[in-house]
Length: 123
Ligand code: I3P
Image 1 (tube, rainbow, N blue to C red):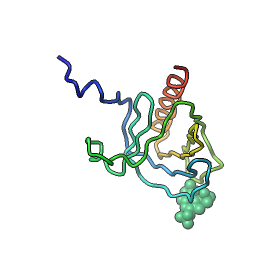
Image 2 (cartoon, rainbow, N blue to C red):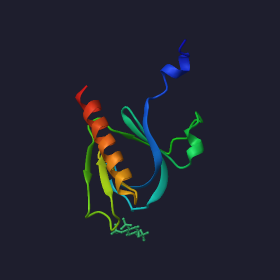
Image 3 (tube, helix red, strand yellow):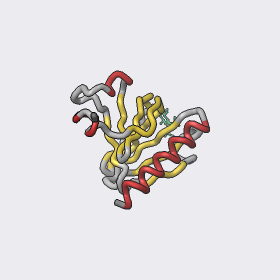
Image 4 (tube, protein in one colour):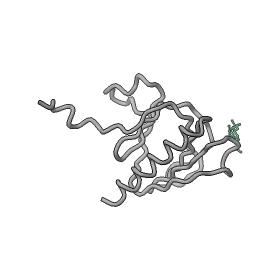
């Protein structure tokens, strides 16, 4: 028996602490401010939480929601002095830099987000 609530839980592909900087919101440039975020990849969104505990069903617990349908992802060396930085640009013109010192972790996330963008964009 599948409980009703379970049907509405987003499918979580990956979750981990990553450094995130939102550099523009709806096309408007923002001051870069890196923060360690609990980052959760679902089948069509990237959920950003300040604290791991906020993944519970608490209203307002999500600090930011990145819609991946129609988004663009690319590695960038120009936008940061840090290593392993990739950028997500949403179809509403918000830009996020995502970074972790661990190269294979960064690759794993970039690949998974790229797949999610491709699958949520075609349907
Ligand atoms: C920024 C801060 C960021 C840095 C950014 C600085 O200064 O040091 O960490 O980005 O560089 O401007 P402030 O805290 O005073 O805003 P990186 O760590 O990604 O290099 P930038 O201006 O070259 O983007």
